[in-house]
Length: 384
View 1 (cartoon, rainbow, N blue to C red):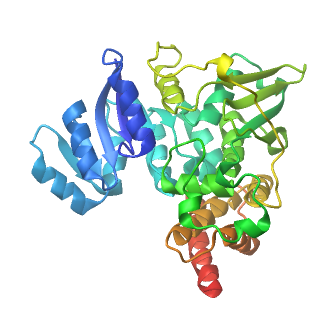
View 2: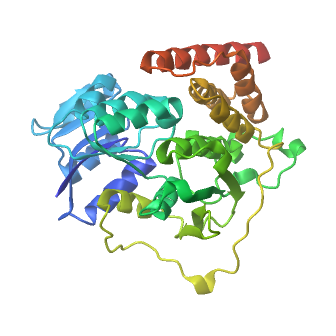
View 3: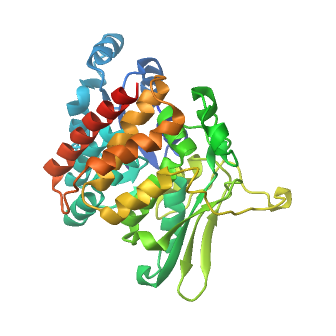
């Protein structure tokens, strides 16, 4: 019986993880849940899974939830409560599905407390990939990717010599604006950016997919998770989203992982690894696949990809600055204070101002994150 904490349980990944767990009551037990403010859904999850502890990072909402529950479930509040959950001795695995940079400290705390981490968050690794890798090695714990692309790479590399990798191909659906020209991109509104053709995700990651920054983050994720240099990581547009990523070896063999577009599949494998469990979810029907198509990405129309490679080559605190500038820009776009097409321009402006620290410690990373957020706001204010 694997004892699991799900941090970000009311988001799309968290809900899917709970659905997987519900199918295997003899394999998994939920002992802790964490959410930001959606206490209505969290209340239902508590009633279904009966966790020992729950954290709501919005402290006022935590108090409201506490008044509705009996004393059997301990309610914690604030980010410090999330970090406390990561220290619990009776937790084996932490599913980290918190959105954005807020996931960094919980990830570090989980690793330091020797928890296995099933990671759905990209931003924490982008911010501090080398530091997180070192902590995982020092604490002899493992990080298992949940994202479909990273899960695919991981599965293709199991039992393989990473030194024999020639290229890794990250597949991308292309998002909602695949094939749009620059003139069309200028008039994009929020409703259009949130209409992803393949995946149902939260607002932030959906906008990142529309700008293709999400794929840029995956370049950095791949570097840090698998110790692969950026030159070996290629982006391939694959609108059908059937092949989730591919690994090419020096002998010309390419291994790929295929499945339907259902996040429950990589979540289930992350939780059950190294065992493969029977699933009630959908299977591929090859007779219904008309074709699989592949094209190169257009870096001119989607400059966030170039910015991600730039951060990868620069290293140090540059990826952290990339992430912070993007995080603020997406929030401002969703608040209608920044145009969609201006998101990469603002990020580039912040990166141009930054002098990267080459081998940053945690304090350097947190300082760079705060600095970049301030600089991003200043640039956006000037635009307005």
